[in-house]
Image (cartoon, rainbow, N blue to C red; front, side):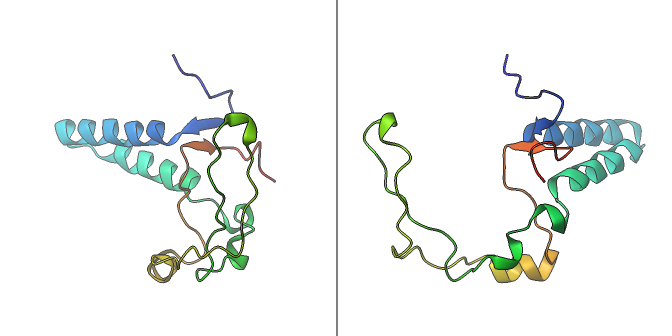
Length: 119
Protein backbone atom coordinates (compact mmCIF):
# COMPACT_ATOMS: atom_id res chain seq x y z
CA UNK A 1 0.00 0.00 0.00
CA UNK A 2 1.34 3.39 -0.96
CA UNK A 3 0.56 6.08 1.58
CA UNK A 4 2.10 9.47 0.71
CA UNK A 5 -0.54 11.36 2.68
CA UNK A 6 0.62 12.48 6.11
CA UNK A 7 -2.37 14.77 6.48
CA UNK A 8 -0.98 17.54 4.30
CA UNK A 9 -0.89 16.14 0.80
CA UNK A 10 -2.94 13.89 -1.41
CA UNK A 11 -2.83 12.56 -4.96
CA UNK A 12 -4.53 13.87 -8.06
CA UNK A 13 -6.02 10.39 -8.41
CA UNK A 14 -7.88 10.89 -5.12
CA UNK A 15 -9.62 13.94 -6.60
CA UNK A 16 -10.37 12.04 -9.82
CA UNK A 17 -11.82 9.09 -7.91
CA UNK A 18 -13.90 11.33 -5.63
CA UNK A 19 -15.38 13.14 -8.63
CA UNK A 20 -15.97 9.92 -10.60
CA UNK A 21 -17.67 8.23 -7.64
CA UNK A 22 -19.96 11.23 -7.14
CA UNK A 23 -20.77 11.24 -10.88
CA UNK A 24 -21.76 7.56 -10.76
CA UNK A 25 -23.93 8.24 -7.70
CA UNK A 26 -25.55 11.17 -9.52
CA UNK A 27 -26.22 9.07 -12.62
CA UNK A 28 -27.89 6.34 -10.55
CA UNK A 29 -29.79 8.53 -8.10
CA UNK A 30 -30.42 11.65 -10.16
CA UNK A 31 -29.03 13.69 -7.25
CA UNK A 32 -25.99 15.71 -8.35
CA UNK A 33 -25.12 17.69 -5.20
CA UNK A 34 -22.21 15.41 -4.29
CA UNK A 35 -20.84 15.70 -7.83
CA UNK A 36 -20.97 19.50 -7.67
CA UNK A 37 -19.29 19.42 -4.25
CA UNK A 38 -16.56 17.05 -5.50
CA UNK A 39 -15.87 19.28 -8.50
CA UNK A 40 -15.75 22.39 -6.28
CA UNK A 41 -13.26 20.70 -3.93
CA UNK A 42 -11.14 19.69 -6.91
CA UNK A 43 -11.05 23.25 -8.20
CA UNK A 44 -10.37 24.61 -4.70
CA UNK A 45 -7.21 22.56 -4.29
CA UNK A 46 -5.95 21.92 -7.81
CA UNK A 47 -6.21 25.56 -8.88
CA UNK A 48 -3.93 27.29 -6.38
CA UNK A 49 -4.43 30.95 -5.55
CA UNK A 50 -2.18 33.52 -7.21
CA UNK A 51 -0.19 33.85 -3.96
CA UNK A 52 0.68 30.16 -4.25
CA UNK A 53 2.01 30.63 -7.79
CA UNK A 54 4.64 33.32 -7.19
CA UNK A 55 6.64 32.44 -10.30
CA UNK A 56 3.67 32.84 -12.61
CA UNK A 57 4.33 36.52 -13.33
CA UNK A 58 7.97 35.87 -14.27
CA UNK A 59 7.30 32.86 -16.52
CA UNK A 60 8.45 33.46 -20.09
CA UNK A 61 6.59 31.32 -22.66
CA UNK A 62 9.34 32.06 -25.20
CA UNK A 63 11.89 30.49 -22.85
CA UNK A 64 9.86 27.99 -20.79
CA UNK A 65 12.58 25.68 -19.48
CA UNK A 66 16.26 24.93 -19.15
CA UNK A 67 17.77 21.76 -20.54
CA UNK A 68 19.49 19.38 -18.12
CA UNK A 69 21.23 16.35 -19.66
CA UNK A 70 20.67 12.77 -18.54
CA UNK A 71 23.35 11.10 -16.43
CA UNK A 72 24.52 7.50 -16.60
CA UNK A 73 24.31 6.79 -12.88
CA UNK A 74 22.08 8.03 -10.05
CA UNK A 75 25.06 9.41 -8.13
CA UNK A 76 25.78 11.75 -11.08
CA UNK A 77 22.63 13.73 -10.30
CA UNK A 78 21.73 16.50 -10.16
CA UNK A 79 23.19 17.51 -13.50
CA UNK A 80 23.87 21.13 -14.37
CA UNK A 81 21.24 22.83 -16.48
CA UNK A 82 22.11 24.65 -19.68
CA UNK A 83 20.14 27.90 -19.96
CA UNK A 84 21.53 28.50 -23.46
CA UNK A 85 20.21 25.22 -24.90
CA UNK A 86 17.20 25.93 -27.16
CA UNK A 87 14.04 24.42 -25.66
CA UNK A 88 11.37 25.89 -27.91
CA UNK A 89 8.29 27.92 -27.13
CA UNK A 90 5.33 27.02 -24.90
CA UNK A 91 2.51 26.50 -27.45
CA UNK A 92 -0.29 26.44 -24.83
CA UNK A 93 0.49 29.62 -22.94
CA UNK A 94 -1.73 32.03 -24.86
CA UNK A 95 -4.78 29.75 -24.81
CA UNK A 96 -4.39 28.79 -21.14
CA UNK A 97 -3.96 32.34 -19.86
CA UNK A 98 -6.87 33.52 -22.03
CA UNK A 99 -9.09 30.83 -20.49
CA UNK A 100 -7.87 30.83 -16.87
CA UNK A 101 -6.06 34.11 -16.27
CA UNK A 102 -3.35 33.87 -13.63
CA UNK A 103 -4.63 30.70 -11.97
CA UNK A 104 -3.70 27.44 -13.66
CA UNK A 105 -4.35 23.88 -12.61
CA UNK A 106 -1.40 22.23 -10.91
CA UNK A 107 0.16 19.62 -13.14
CA UNK A 108 1.37 17.49 -10.28
CA UNK A 109 0.63 14.07 -8.90
CA UNK A 110 0.96 15.12 -5.27
CA UNK A 111 -1.04 18.10 -4.04
CA UNK A 112 -0.31 20.13 -0.91
CA UNK A 113 -3.93 20.65 0.14
CA UNK A 114 -3.31 22.91 3.13
CA UNK A 115 -0.14 24.69 1.99
CA UNK A 116 1.93 22.89 4.64
CA UNK A 117 4.98 22.68 2.37
CA UNK A 118 4.35 25.95 0.55
CA UNK A 119 4.61 29.50 1.76
